[in-house]
Length: 369
Ligand code: IPM
Ligand code: MG
Picture: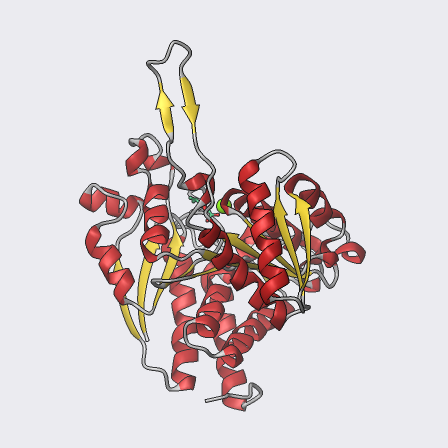
């Protein structure tokens, strides 16, 4: 398995180091040979090459089985021209790899209930996946820009979805729903935006023709944001466009205790990208404090979706849970409950590695080699 590691900026390198350690233990246990390549990305690439991502890195990413991404951006590069922003590098990578379906699972863990803003009696059992369309919508629509010469200067973007663009991401969501609770919620703003009225129409048709066994419902994004907080247990698989998915997934992260806990997988036509949902956290970068669990859980998703090893994914998830059960907490999830201890990136990462190794050695994880 060829993995391209793009640490990026800020805490990216720190969390990725722990994620890679976990990946190599899992790969060893499974007899998967792992070929790791590294490249600069985001601000780091901008400093070295004058671009947030180079053509060579895009080519490497296409050639790899998976990309493991850290985080991009930071105040150092905040004032560069818009087309040079680190975020643009990330968007280009997603677009060039055509990773149109971004899976962002969120699960409430009772070990982290002190870190969640929700009362445990509301949130216990919440376990859902947001399937966010990732290479279309308002993030990529043309025309876009700022016209400063206009009599009344104007900024504008275009939200656009084609039928095929909706169908392919909806298919991923329907398939996932089939493997879970056979329920799918499609989130839109069909009461106002034509583009999402069309989204609703296409998803409804696809459901009726190809997935009659999946119970489909629809919600407006504003009311769904409220429901996600009020009744997080009701959510199962949620499919939505690029921008709504961006917003709802940060909201989902808060429910679980911290953005630092959320992994993601971006899959599609030309590759796969695995990355924690959190950003580069420049305020704590380089201090050994960052939470690597989102990155580690992303490795679990890589093992599931790229390596086809759900058993190893379960083993990684279990090892993360075991480290939390030991009481280990990084700063973002440390609320001083009895039996917990605040630790750094390396310590919690090492605990996950140790738990994973012993679970794999003890054979408590049934390996489906
Ligand atoms: C995310 C991030 C990115 C996005 C940024 C960094 C471009 O917020 O992955 O959710 O908006 O997609
Ligand atoms: Mg985001």
